[in-house]
Every structure is written in C-alpha cells, then in structure tokens.
Amino acid sequence: MKKCFAVLLLILSLSCSKSSNINYSFDNILSYKDTIFIKSRFADCGEWGGHNEIIKIYSEKEQTKLVYTRYRVDCGVRDSTGLIVQNEETKKNIVLSISQKAGLMNYINNVMQYKFMENEFGNSGNSFSVEDSENQLKISHYGSSSILMENYNDLMNKLGFPSVIVKSE
Image (cartoon, rainbow, N blue to C red; front, side, top):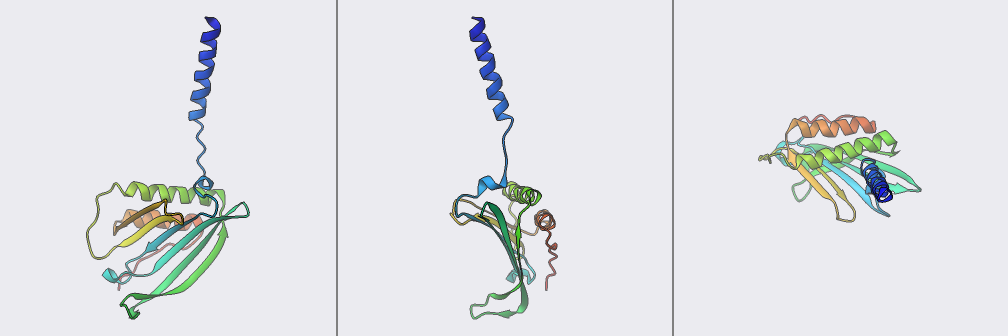
C-alpha cells in the first residue's frame, strides 16, 4: 500500500510539473517551408485606403528571417482600376533575435484578442492581418481604434523599424 501511494504521488508530481513548464516559442509556429505574413494597410487617403506594409517571416538555414516592405502612395495617383498605386519605398531583411520573436508573438496574440472587440463600422480605417502561406492561419482586424496602431507601432519598435503615423489627405 505504501508503494502504491508513493508511485501515485510520484506520477502526480511529474504530471503537474510538466504542465507548468510550457515552452512558448515563435519557432513553433513556423513549419517546413511555411511563411507568415503580417499585412497592414493604412488610411492615408481616407476611405480610399493608403500605403501598405508587409512583413514576411520565414525559416532558412535554422534561422528565422524577416523581410519588411513599406510602400508609399500619392493619393491622387490611381491605376486603371481606380486603386491607389503602391510604390515600394523601403525593403529590409533581418535575422530575428529572441526579443524580436517575443515581440512578434505579443503582436499576434494581441491581434487575436482584438477579434473579441466590438467591430467598428466606417469607411476609413486601418487594416491589420496575420496569415500563413499554408492557409491555416488568418486573423484580421479593421478599424480606427488607437489600440490597433499602438500594437503595430510597438511591433515596429521591437523590430527596429520606424513607427507609422497616418496623415490623412
């Protein structure tokens, strides 16, 4: 009886210790040949949209890499379909540090939580999405709430990129 009690106590203590040591890592979200995209569109031109920013995250040679692309717009220039023309302004490649990966995890977690906020209705707002190349992940949020911009600018600061300031024309 004492042996059974000791074995039961040992099993319970081992099972409890495993559950409290969950290993969260940004690397766990990227599978082989998978890519994560963080896409943002800002309301520089009011209801017509504005400039886009795309962050591409992928693994290569056991490193997690990121490509940041920022586009600039002239609100008065449109293509044949009426869309605002996006011109590439900046393109930067970096290898992510542990703290930058933590910043990405925090950003994605916040975007997911914002899905529980009341939807905003309107013609002018910013759009933020997180999706993967395997079409297994797609989270998006649209609106003009300052919390969305703060979350994005926190990510930009963690990645070493400039904050976004939307100047509506």
